[in-house]
Length: 275
Image 1 (cartoon, rainbow, N blue to C red):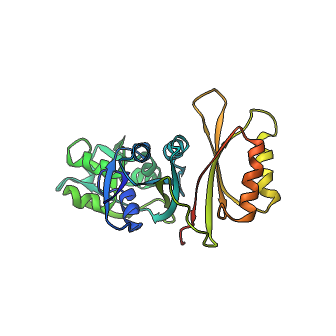
Image 2 (image 1 turned 45 degrees about the vertical axis):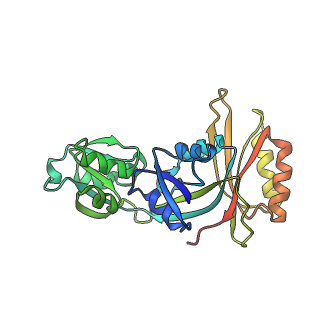
């Protein structure tokens, strides 16, 4: 049986994303964080992990990025995107105007902040480890109202007061499928390659790396930096490239970048999701 780790509990958008990959014979394993999902790969407890990596409203999911940088034995082999909208739910029979404690994931809170301000101005925000966990908090009496996927209301016997809630109707989240020591997917003509690297802390160090891509016409679709947490003022740079790692221009750029970095690792190469 193929085991797939995802941010739980059951009823999260990450579970929905995991199931959308349609992995034959999959057993879905809920864990408490993206880091735990990737650690389960390193430990050999699961075959795949699915993690949110980027949100169109709140930007990069930094917990996933940090965990990917620390996971040497795994790589990204696929991605999917979900349109994100929430249901507002309470225990059965409870009215919204009496709610005092509002729970959801902090990223989700940014996506419904305006709606909550207009409709639930009296509530205190309580961060949850996931949107489904927020629904569980409501069911257990630890919060009064939650923003979560509709399925979470069904799982916990909650009453839905509003559907399709999102401050921006274009909100989407990108999820990646990570495998242990993956076989590299073949080029499709519409691929993405991700790398993480470090440079010396000196003027022009980052520019020299980026110029290798520009010189070969390789499009960088995303760049983020994260502190290494090893030394002050040192950073990991995450770059997504348009193209497959075996494409001549991408392969040449990656080889040239090695001369300008103190460490570099490919995080994966995979087909881009259809839009």
